[in-house]
Each structure stands twice: as C-alpha cells, then as structure tokens.
Length: 231
Image (cartoon, rainbow, N blue to C red; front, side, top):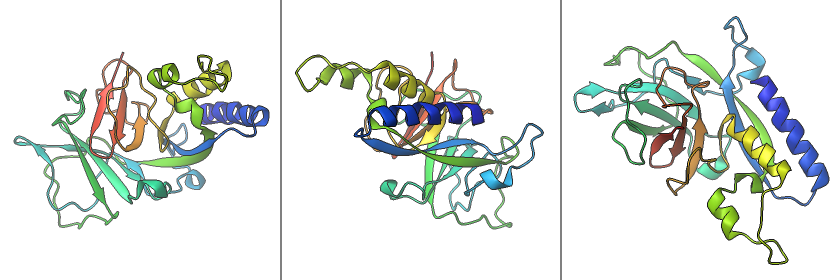
C-alpha cells in the first residue's frame, strides 16, 4: 500500500505545482495497518477503523431472512466532518455468495453509530468472518477534477467552449485513486455510473479479502446503500 500512496502523492504534488489554482478535495486512503509479518504498525493505526472481527454495540443484529449477516468492516468517519457521521459498520449476507451488485440490494446493511464498544455479554449470532485487523487512514488532497466520470466529462466544456477532456495527468491521478480504497471525495466507477447520492467511500478485496466482489470488483458505499461493480 505504501507504494500506491507514494505514487499518488507524487502525482498530486506534480499536478498542483503545475496547476496551483486547481481545486482540491481531501480524502482518506484506507489500508491494513500491518507489516509483512502481520504485526500492527502502531504509528500508522491512527483511528478506530478495522476489518472483520466483532462489530461494535448493536441492539438489533441484521439478518437476511433467517441468516445473520457478517460484519465486514467498521470505519471511523470523523475525519470527514462533511459527512456528518461518526462511525459506519458494513454487514453483508453470506459474503462469498452475496448478490450485492445493485443499489438497495438486500445483501448489505449499513449501521451508523457512535463507536460504542460491544457488551461482553452480548453474544453474536455468528462467528466473525475473519480475525480483526486494523485499518489505517492516510489523508491526502487530490484534484477535484480527478473524480469526473465519463458522463460529466462529456457534458463539460473548456473555458473557450471546446469539448473538455481529462488530461494525461488527471487520468493518471484518477487511476491511482481508483487503485486505492478510500473515503471522501466522489466515486470512481468501475463500470458506468450506477447510482447518485451522498457518497461515503469505496474499497476492493485488498482491504476486505473475505468477500466476493466478482472479477476484481469494487464495493461502493453511499449513505443509504452499498453495492459492488466488477469487470
């Protein structure tokens, strides 16, 4: 992950040096805060986000029909005050067999909360999908224009009325952002734009391995729904 962060940093620094007037958007890159031996990197785990393990306190565990859903990750959203949320936990029904490829599917459940720790006496109805692993957040400012999708590019025009195109620099930055998991900013779609609404973030199977997202898929988390796209 460090290489991906360094690549994106270098691309953004070069872009802002060449375009000091460019609008900036702050996002938080997400990655597992462990070294190659699986040991916690203390100085990089700077929040309360984590993958798998036990979820925080929840009164009514989500079910899909009679099957309890699996807690996949919990994210600390306080670094992005514009979201006006504290924490979010994502639950998925049968992670390896889920069909969460459309908005408002029944296979995902979003739980917003204050980060309250679970009571030890509160038994979970299902074993964790994997052992808990810490998720680190790395803040970075990126060009706002790097989030333009194909539809927005087609509708945009340069200042002189000519058709607008993403520059090679912005295309490279967009790809570098897409190759990371992150919260904040806007979605970078794997396929065509599939939904419109307040955006939380997106992740791949490098961050959350114990889930089926199709062929090299991406999970998109919005305020009211979570779903994935794949090749």
